[in-house]
Structure formats: C-alpha cells, structure tokens
Length: 296
Image 1 (cartoon, helix red, strand yellow):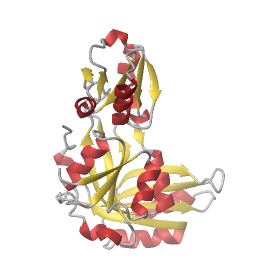
Image 2 (cartoon, one colour):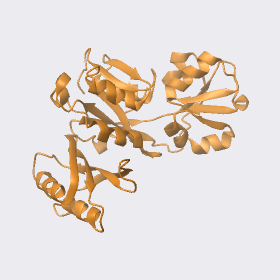
Image 3 (cartoon, rainbow, N blue to C red):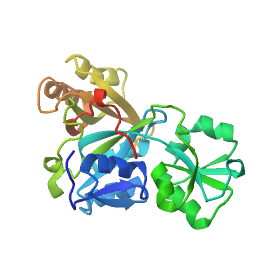
C-alpha cells in the first residue's frame, strides 16, 4: 500500500472503527484520518476537496451489501480506485465493573448488529441501532450507561476506557467487510494517479452502474454484454430509482479493465443496451489468496 502522508482520508465513524483500520491498511499508519458522522458526509467531504480520498464499506460477508454506499456512488459519481478486504472482529464492551448478565441493551451500527445476531439472541439483550460501532463505545463511556454495552472493534475499548466482556462474537468466524477506496472523478487531489493500488498483486476489477429500459428482457440483454465476452461478474446489486417508482439502478463488479479488451467491447454493448451506464473505475482487485487483512 502507499503511504498517504498528510493527505486526509475521509471515513464514516469514530476513532477505532473498522473503516479507520481499512484506511490505515490502505494508506499506512501515518495517514491523516477525517472522521465523518454519516456516509453522506464522507461523500460530500470528498466532493468538496476536504479529503483526497475516502474509504467506505460496500459489502459484508455475513450481512450483505451496504446499500447507502451504492446510492451515494450514483449520487456523487466518485472514482473507485481500489479496494480493501478487512477481517472484522466484534467485541462486546461496557463500563469497568459491569458484568455480562447486567447488560440489557447492546448499541452498535445496524451492520454490526446483523453480523452478531446469534450472540445477541443468546444474550437476550435489546439491539439498539446507532450511527457507528466505535461511536457506540464512546456513547457508552460518555453517558455512563451501566445496563448497556457496545459492539465495536476491540481497539475502541482501549480508546474509550471500556472493558471487553466478550470478544469475537460475530456469527461467522470468517466475517469480512469489503471497502472501496474513492477519489474525486475530476482528478483533483491526485485522484487515481496518486493511489498506489490496494492489493497490487490482484487482477483488475471494474465497478459499473447502469439503468436498463423498463421492458421484458432488458436486464437479460444488459448482462449478456458480459457473458458474450466471457467476463465474470463478482457482484451485482439493484437499488430503487427514487425518481421512477419500481424502476431500478444496477451495480456490478466485473473482472477486467475498462480500457482493455474484452471488457472495453462489453461496455460498448452495455451502453447500446441501456439508458445510462457509468463506469466508476478500474482498479487492482484484492487478491483472494491473500485473504482479508487482519484488524488490530
């Protein structure tokens, strides 16, 4: 990975969150982190030039897609310049002296709560959605809530002076989250050229978005553009089009470089078959044989 130096990288979440770990895995420990409360804030800070890059979660191996990221990709159209796959561990943490049997509420981001459903069911505590994992730990510490605990990365306990009651409580032992590295599409702040390449040993991957005609067979024709050229789709997601009820936008990750054959020709066919096509970027795929990056 490259060293981001003093160029700020925007993330959603408080200090100690998984997005910070992903950003430091991508840019090095010395990178300046710009924390934002919401994903919308992250995209806006990047668009305004207050951050050179952003690192945002896009999918989890247990809980699935982070749909807000897809909606904001379409709204802001940044450049996707890299990806990081991070092994995600969740710990249950509370104020010092609180016992596990005293916990009545567990506060965390909805994605984290979804990744720990079996643990929470066995605990019998109420799951309370919040804006962030590490931010939930800070909330517990600041409010002095002794009947509540937070689900957050273990590092958050040390940052906020909490005690870990249980570690590794995620349902799936291989729980991992994929993050996208974003830059401004206009190249300001360095753009893709300043990015050294997450998972540089991996093959090329391209993220695209497209809108089909609203008629029978339209999606079949669009996806056929990739199939006819022998290209593998590693991810496909649909999201509602707010301006047109019951119409959808589609997002896909496809193996290949948009500037090279055969993906270049497939994208030409896709444009001919669709109302709109956006190529968010081609980048080095995270190597499968490398596995997810470990958190601290």
